[in-house]
Length: 330
Image (tube, rainbow, N blue to C red; front, side):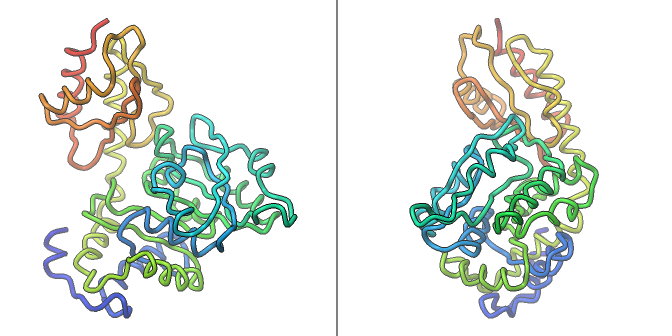
């Protein structure tokens, strides 16, 4: 990636003149089966650009109550777009019930905000990174068509989902109107995401990206790494998934640690600390970081998230497990 960045042909992307950015956007559109794509600095910028492009101020969007857009994007849909979120519960895989979605659509009445958009996610970052099957998105699409709504997919780990489900990514994206995916997670690029959709939608999203401060000049040096990510890093995601499974199996054998093996399908491993332990997740994560330079994400006082990726190998998994065995005692 660094070699590709160093030798990238560049131009002014604000004027659509950066050949490497244009190549990356065309590649992303082809891979997702969409008409066009837009290179953005982050998944959050892509999601907010999409929401602003699908809606107008005062509209509302249906979404999971613990979705990334709802809890981890600084309230951008509200503060920047004036779009009202209508959150509904999700199950242990991150799926909203179809009945709840339909019930959340506001009636055509001047007292209510206009429901315009359904926001979905795959894999679901706060629910075990479970790869949600295509049947879910097909049904969401049918509901959206019935009520005249658009569907946007936050696909930060979209390719993890496709690899885990053993399907082409287009089998997921064909059910939504727009999709974002990250280059900087499992695909290992240093920065960037893609927003994909129809040509007219991306034209509007390009305007919204500029409003958000996302006009970039010689961005080809970043896009070059993204091209390597899409051409060379997707197939190896299965290795990350295998390492996550290895970690989960090891965690299952440690008394005091709770993990659901059935939910470990991609590169995210959520594990809990039994309440019998006189140890909280924050203290444990800090100790592991200081002693082994292994960084863990503390979700709550009893829940930790671990993420496998290209730079995590089997030896790292065993190192973490050894430290946990030493520290987690009932």
